[in-house]
Structure formats: structure tokens, C-alpha cells
Image (tube, rainbow, N blue to C red; front, side):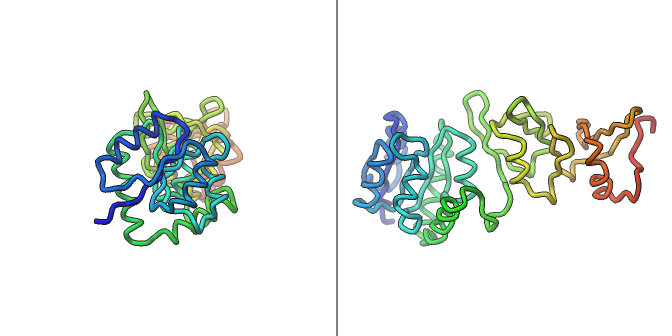
Amino acid sequence: MKPLRVLIVDDEALARQRLLDLLGREAVEIAGVAENGNAAVDAIRELAPDLVFLDIQMPGRTGLEVVREIGAANMPATIFCTAYDQYALKAFDVAAVDYLVKPFDDERFELAFGRARHAVELEEIGALSTRLKALLDGGGTPATTGWLERVAVESRGQVRVVPVEEIDAITASGPYVELHVGEKAWLVRERMQTLEDRLDPARFARVHRSAIVRLDRIDALLREAGGDYTLRLKNGRQIPVSRSRVEALERWMGLSGPRPSSRNT
């Protein structure tokens, strides 16, 4: 198997060494190491690597600015590296072969590297270039990539990916949100509106300014004595419902009129 020529771009010495150590176990040739975005542009042009591990937040030029300078069509396969979940989500859903959220473990690295090798061997870089261009042109997720399918969350020093299909509800938590998955809740540093815009409206609905629910998790719509409404999910969790959104929920539930369940039944 022909070794991949790999370029490492990161402004942190420890992060560069971590990647060098992990790549030492693989059949690769280290084409070079760059410590900032400006050096990355020169290295990509001069060294023509097969794969680049590209940090997003760097002095001089960010990772995305490096891509913009090189041009999406001229970029090698790219694995974005980041300490920021919101950037990781955008990169993974839109443009990269994969992404690594710092700190990452050996298993997550091996998964990302395996995907990159597979993409290079199958010569899929053209499709990746198209997605990179869409990211640079629009700054967001193009329609061709579909709706959000996973969310990266960090808890107690560990980063994990939560599949959207496992989420029961999303509720506001100060300026951020909490993902509710069964009995667990994961804090995500993202705004409610941002997540709502990226979730499939056929599967999720904003039922309150502070809550989004997965529609197939709904068990009953309850009407309070004062005329307010609450959703009961199949796991027993109760979510407030804005009065302005009750009619849309009733339509989704197949109710021709206001026939919600009552707490007395």
C-alpha cells in the first residue's frame, strides 16, 4: 500500500506532536509540519500532500482561510482539527473527510484516518472539493448535504458524537441548549435557533421558545386547567407548548379539532 504523504498544520506544539505520534503507527510519509495558516498555504502548494490535518483556529490565517487561499479544487483530502464544537459540526457536515475535536482518543483518530485513506484511494477528492467550495461560498450547509445527523458534545473532558436520531428533546439552558437523550442531558454551546434551522422539520418541531421535540417521541398533548398546554414524551418527560404552536401540533397528531388529552383522564 502506497504511503500517504501527510501534512500537519497546528499552532500548538503538543497537538502537532500528538498527531506525529499517532501517524507513526500508520503507513504514511510526513511531508511536512506547519505552525500557522500562512505557513500552511506555502506547504500545501510546495509539498502537494495527499492528506492534511488542518487546525481551524490559528493565528495569521484560520483553517478555512487556508482553504480559501488555496482554492477548494486544489485542496488535498482534509481532516479538520478543532477545540470548538460549532466549527466541528460545520466542517463534518459540509466539507471534510472527517474532523477531530480536541482532545481526541486513539480510536477516534484511527476512524478519521481510515476514512481519509479510503477517500484518497477511491479518488473521491473531487466530491470533497465541491463540498469545500460550498462551505466557502455559502458559509453554511448546502442543501445537497441534507439535515444535521449528529452533534458533537463535550462532557468531563471527553468529546462524543450524539446521533440526532437518539435525541428526544432539546431545551434552552441559558445562552446554550441541552440535548435530552433518554435519562441523560448533554450541554451544547449552540443557540436554539441555529439547531432548529439545521434539524429536519419532518422529524423535529419547535414547540416553545425554549424547546424542540422529536415528533415521534410524543406520547400525548395535555391541556392544563388554565388553558396552557404540555407535551408528554414517551419517556415521561414533559415539555411546555406555546399556545401559538398547539394547532400545528394537533394537525401533526391527526386531530381535526382541539382534542388534547386531559390530566384527569
